Length: 96
Ligand SMILES: [Zn+2]
Image (cartoon, rainbow, N blue to C red; front, top):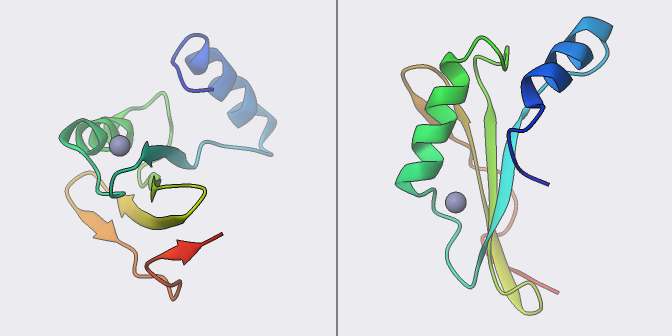
């Protein structure tokens, strides 16, 4: 479930335990390419600058396409100033 309600408290609690921390975001672009939107990019840049997240280089993972047919994956790491798309050795299009 995505959202921000209670997020700061949850992250502070997890960070304080020293066992888990925020890594990044993922979502699905139904029947569309997994290309990050302008809102996706702005959100990730904002997260990388946020002290509440305590994650200077969050990962964005997007899956796009038809989950019952062909889908593709986009992954990248955001830093405060730069984007670093990942070029995994996964095939661009996957079929189920
Ligand atoms: Zn998106």
